[in-house]
Length: 146
Image (cartoon, rainbow, N blue to C red; front, side):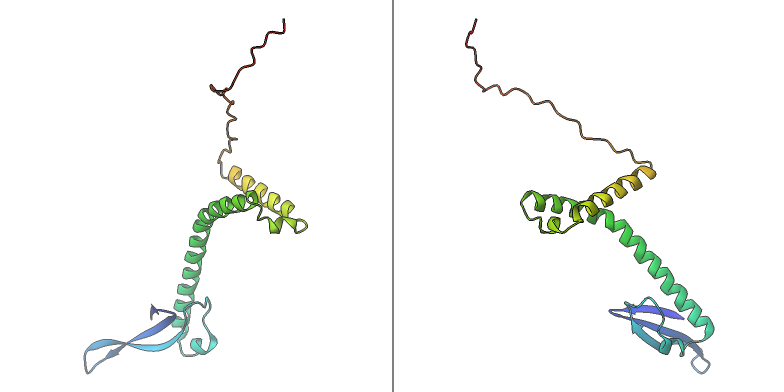
C-alpha cells in the first residue's frame, strides 16, 4: 500500500503484479480528504485488513508529527502573542480585560507557564533594576539656607 498526498487528498495505491508485462503497477484503490485523521468507513471497506492497519498507522504517525509541530511552534507564537497583548493593553485596547474573571484567568495561565518552566529546570530571573543616573543637564539647587 502506498499513501500519497496530492493537494487536499490522500490517495491510496495498491501495487499489483501483472504477469504479462512482468511488472508491478500501482492502482488507485481510494482517496479521501487529507484533513481527516481517521480512515472513513467507505474507504476502509475497499481495503484489506493489512492495508487498513497500514493506513491507520500512517494516519496515527502523521497526527503525532502534527501535534509535535504544533507544540514546537506554540512557544514561538506565545512570545509573539504576549508582546502584541502587552502593546494592546498599553495602547488602551483592553476590551477583553473588562470581561469578568479574564484578568484572573490570564494571571493563572501565566503562573502555570512559570511553573512548567521551573519543572523543566529553567531558572527564571527577574530583570535587574537599574539605578537612575542623575541627569547632567539638570539644574542644581545651590541656594544657601545656612
